[in-house]
Image (tube, rainbow, N blue to C red; front, top):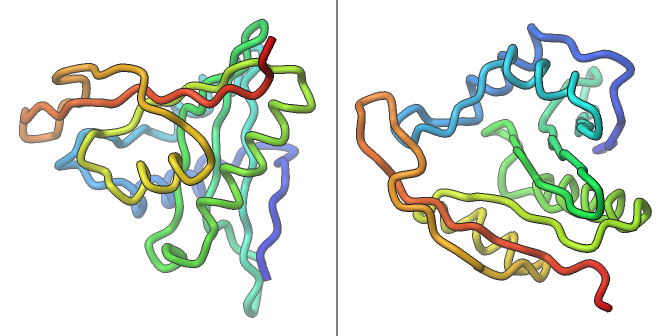
Length: 158
């Protein structure tokens, strides 16, 4: 069973372990728990956790969204490697989009590594479109640069 919950408080230790397991340093996408906690301190930034229940309730993924005026940015989705391919990323994305819709957000943006085909397919399946490219946006631990795609989902049309 999977539950999506808004945490009352962020536990840096479990968050750090989830980030460490979820992101590969060769692509330069890894945030630290401290960066996420700092982002959550900014007005309009929220997190949602996905928990799986087997013998115990344990964190399996999370999303981080920032809302400013009538726009939102999906800052991050992380899914534990042992939970990938089970629809968890899609559930977190759907939750983020629904939350933005209920807040009268017009457009939702995100940036994704151009070579991250699984994530790009997920975003496109929910209606996101590529609207730009940032050459060399991500820097890997080894110094290699990776391009990012900027994607947008129109939530309300005028």
